[in-house]
Image (cartoon, helix red, strand yellow):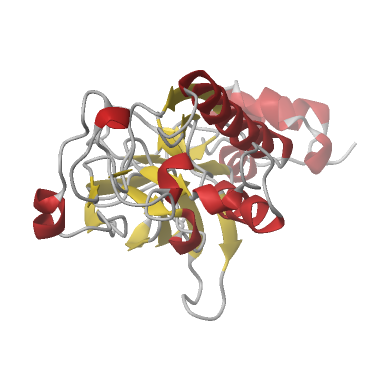
Length: 309
């Protein structure tokens, strides 16, 4: 047996003088300084240093330098807080960089809301428990989502008639234009470009995405649904709202609206969107265009996706 083979766990439980005595009795080789060195305890780490935060699209990327610890303290990951240190959440690490942030550790905080301010703190975890926290770093995420219409354009829209089919006035766009049924602005799916959506925002799939008079999506329509899927990374629930034009049989129009909404919701899930889906058909009761020709009202048969959570 050599000094190195004596269980460290045993030595740590002994006082320094008694540990030295045990070593002497067993081996005649240990000295008091050696035993004392083995008795160093793990200590909670200091706060990470040089914390910087880079805001992105529903994500915060953090960079920091890990704390220095003694020989028996083992770092076991990191946590972050966005509420002043009340709640701490595990921080997924991405990489240790050697280029843009030399010597820094990188982590990502996903699912934050766009257009909102955050106070980010980070602390290390260890075999001695959580360490000290960094001071808060204040940051703000960008808000890319905007109403596609200006305030002036919104004010120019007319109310939806109680009975659209009996409307005899001039051609006009209604408050349903580029909006969900609850009035949330809806951007065109073709403009998403992979940018991430969040609760209360909406996306419009135009009527031209379906073969005329059917709920069958065209190739281009399927591509638009795919564009929407790419923007649902942090969305938990989506309502697919189906609409139709008011010309023709009302019952058939209602059935078509619901079928189109169902087709879009089904494709979201089939193509990998990790969301709960809800279908709601509004039929011909909420047209975005009234009066005029069928061509003018063509997009009444749209589907709108409303982010619920």
